Length: 423
Image (cartoon, rainbow, N blue to C red; front, side, top):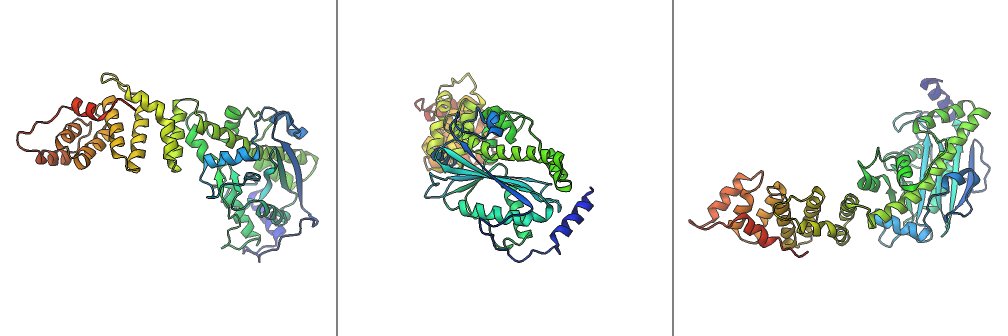
């Protein structure tokens, strides 16, 4: 069917004029439901525990966190509520499968799943599947009620790329069906989008940062006969337009894909937590430190940087420091400068200048410190003049501050004086 035909069919099913309907009341939990299916399954956290037969092979090697472990993981990956996440139910993992992209008017929610801990070692997975276009509103009423009853100030919503897609699309569809008002925020909750820390940690270290790629590379989750995002759209439309035995099998593949998505989110959060705390190599160490620095955890960032800073301090004058060591030195300097530890920051800049003579940013920062904080215009002139991109105005100003005939120290003298070899 063409897009125009789909839109016409959907408009007839909705009976809509294009305006948001009055807000609809949620049905009681036990009310009859027509036009959509609601399924529930439970998954044991421990490997070797009871896991649904249709997912057992895929989940066999997957390490899932207990509820307290997930709470700790999410606290590492994002800034959580001040009082901390609930150790019994810290998060609801959530994912949508839709019939199109965000801006397409024909896009509806075809399948949705949510997973949360019902015991420290057991996850509950609930899934909603649309059976006919006109039932999307009824399905979303039920879905919104379940989310609202579980997600709260101490329970985060966890998604993968949900800040850009799942959450805004769900809000749009809730408003479209009159379930909430346009001015309401139906998902007022802490939101942890795992794509953000995943990109911080693993960008450019694999073909991409898609969920399926990260599952394969870091979670040992092998999906049998999985479907791509483009296939999901086509399979959902095929089911909604002609719900027969063949399209029901297609829908089952989408449902399985959707369930694996929400389950793997918990495992991904747990794995990233471990790597953010115990990086496996220097690249991850630097990236994890940057992540913690962005979240205001300066002490942890400096602790992770320490091995790289030790290596930077040991760089001899005739050997250039590695790019990672230099980047670590500049990051540590920025952390110390922001914390008011300007002497420590100057030490890092001096080490970078020694490791990479002429490093423009380090020379400029150290020259500023020597001129304005240490009140050593001669030393500042030696450092500024050796930069690969010296500031002409700074050089003129520094020369003006020096008494006629004043001796300017050599650059190695200045650098060695500030780059204390002890870390």
